[in-house]
Image 1 (cartoon, rainbow, N blue to C red):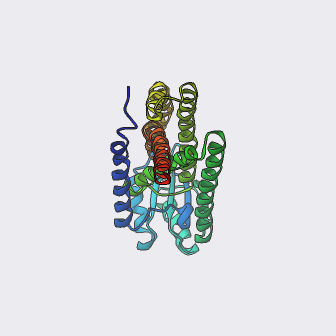
Image 2: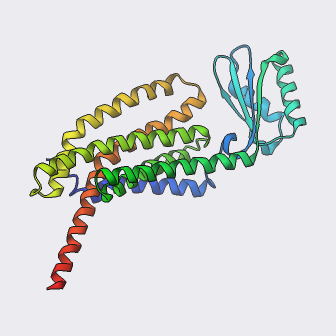
Image 3: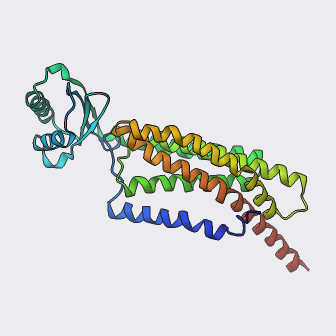
Length: 298
């Protein structure tokens, strides 16, 4: 039988180390790399008409913008590219458009769209992303606490926090720009992970109802073993299309799929190796406190 509850102190070390690495990277890099969505700035969509060298285009854009706007050039659908910068004046934006049209001999219609996002809008998006995650966590805590017990709800939220922190580590270490895709990735992983966790909790409750005299740790180990194949298969089938998106997708899609893949693996890790053992740990801790109270009462 798997001894996951007994090895809980070892399985929890791995995510702690990874999260510490993320915290160090966050501090060294001065925070996350914020995309235009959050930091504010300009996004320009250009149809280049033919395949272009992104490195060459990036150097050209850099030479036609001030040093402090940090231009980013990404490939989009077909021959389209996306140029992102920090907030710039109208004169600089118009000069950049003219330079690109002249250099690559394009018509005015090649400039498909230009969006400007203020820092205020970016702050509002960050606030909404934070609130969406917090509200989702609270609602899940209430649902699981009602369906099982409060300890299971607390264990589930701790596991969700683990998944989110692992994803944030990826963003911090690999300097992936934080944008609106970040919100989608976080909420996707929260939903996926909680589904896996509830399956494990359900099996633990069923097995415990059948044999309440057995040690709860043994019930957890047995239940995780019974759901292990299902958890692995679910993760694999979910990962496959995400991997395909990473291989065949454009830059913006790849930036979304990398943390998503890591989040899926983190969600499986927490559901299998952390959720059940954490529930058992809290249940045993409560039982030990009751024993001590009884002993002191005598």
